[in-house]
Length: 216
Ligand code: B1M
Image (cartoon, rainbow, N blue to C red; front, top):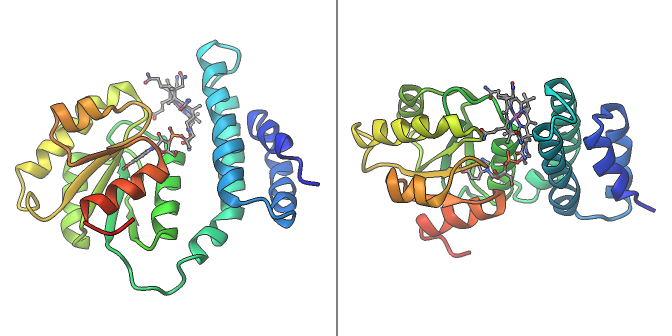
C-alpha cells in the first residue's frame, strides 16, 4: 500500500535516498503521477517555505528538500512526458527564471506539464537577463515566452524583461506569460503588460492554450 504521507515527509526532511523507493512504490500501486506531485511534493515545499520563514529551518535544509523533490520528479518525468509521444507539437515555448533568481523547481514543473500536454519547450535556465530572454526567443523562433519569478526582488526584472521584448523586433512575434510565487496578475499583466499570468503549472498550460487559440 502506497505511503503518500511518507513522500511528503521525505521531501520535508530532505531524505533524498528514501524518495526514489517511495515514489516508485506509489506509482506501482497505481497512484497518479500528478497526485504525487501536486498533493504531496508541492504541499511539502509549501511547508518547507513556512518553516524557513519561521526560522525553524535554514538554507541548507531548504536545499535538501528541493533536491529531494527534484529526485522524486525525475522518476515521474518519463511517465508524464511519454503521454504525448511523437504527436505533432502544439507550439514552442521558451521558459526561464528571471535575473537574480535561482529557483527552478516550479519552472521545471511548468516545463514538464507543457511537454506532457504536447508543447515543445526550450528551457533557458535560471538567472536569465532580459537581453538573454530576447536573444534566445529570437534564436529558437518561439511562440510563447514564460518568465518564472519566486523572489519579490524579482519584480523589476520581470518588468524589464517585458519592456525588453516590447522594445525589440520580437514584439509582435511572441506572447509573454508570467508565473511564480512572487508574481501577481495585477503586476505582470496589469502593470507590465504581459499577455498572460498563470498560478501554477496546470494553469500555465490552460493560459498558453487560450493565448494560442488551442481548444482545451
Ligand atoms: Co528560496 N525563497 N530562497 N530557496 N524558497 C522562497 C521563494 C521564499 C518564499 C521562502 C520564504 O521565505 N518563505 C523566499 C522568498 C521571499 C520573498 O521574496 N518574498 C525565499 C528566499 C528568501 C530565498 C533566499 C534569498 C534565501 C537566502 O539565501 N537567504 C535564496 C535566494 C536565492 C536566489 O534565487 N538568488 C533562496 C534559495 C533557495 C534554495 C536554493 C535553497 C531553494 C531553491 C532550490 C531550487 O529551486 N533548485 C529554495 C526553496 C526550495 C524555496 C521554497 C521553500 C520552495 C520553492 C519551490 O520549489 N516550491 C520557497 C518557499 C515557497 O515557495 N513556499 C522559497 C515548489 C514549486 C513547485 O512551487 O516554485 O511556487 P513554485 O512554482 C509553482 C508556481 O509558483 C507556478 O507553478 C509552479 C508549479 O505549480 N509557477 C509558474 C512557477 N513558475 C511559473 C512560471 C509560469 C507559470 C507558473 O509561467 C511562465
